[in-house]
Image 1: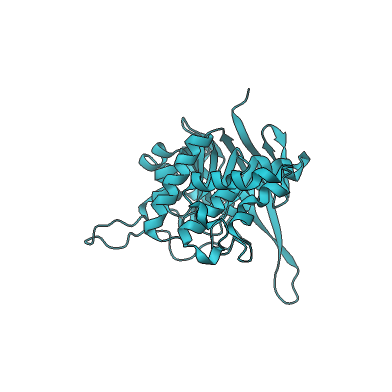
Image 2: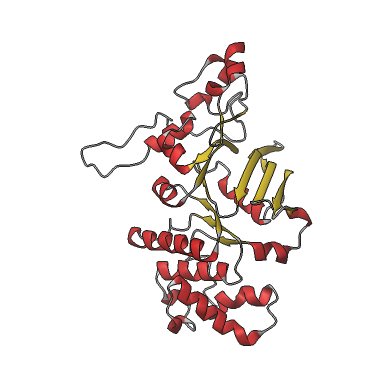
Length: 324
């Protein structure tokens, strides 16, 4: 039996955006031919600058955003051919901001039990018991069952969001910046909770994060995205100790250190992010790359398999290097 739970193949999402007055619409390739494999039990982190396509890719995996081209399979079945409720039982999201992802007019109990009602649990007598069991599992006291989100702290609200996502015991949870809206003192609690739940419920995570310290702490595998492409993919230890793509090296060098004697690190990426509507020719990273070669501006790199994943860079393509 295959261990693959999610398989995205050549996934593309193109938005048509306005070009301004007296101009037609122009394509923006938010995700541009991405391949991603998620195995059962993995914690796959998607990292990269804002606008690189991480959230769009996650929304397509969840079925919330239609694909322009390519395919996504969940549990070896095409996502497009599955019933939405069946997909919801397999995949659940935890959104970034617990202050906006919870309905302020609904009680905590109503929020957590809603998936039971929507996804067809025909026994209302068990709803409260199951909700309270899940609340206890995520560290929420049962006494807040009748409370409203405004009466809870940020960390408690995120625990409510986690309980809602897990109430029907999905196999995969998509976490979009699950700790970024929380105080630093609460972030570690939520991360530890996610790790505990992963082992206890045999969960698989896809985590979107800008915080590389979070990624190093929780992920088993990392996919680095740049302008809609995955430019490097490897297990966490390898990527953090031996990054191969120049963009990955720049991201890792941007991490702040607690040493007060050190200045803000210089990533050498410059201040300007390329226009995604008019991406650079060849390798889209070449205008910002410290290791750029002549042919980088004219030839698009292909994914080169490595012992731990892949890297999309001319530095590792012997055929391209010889041709240059």
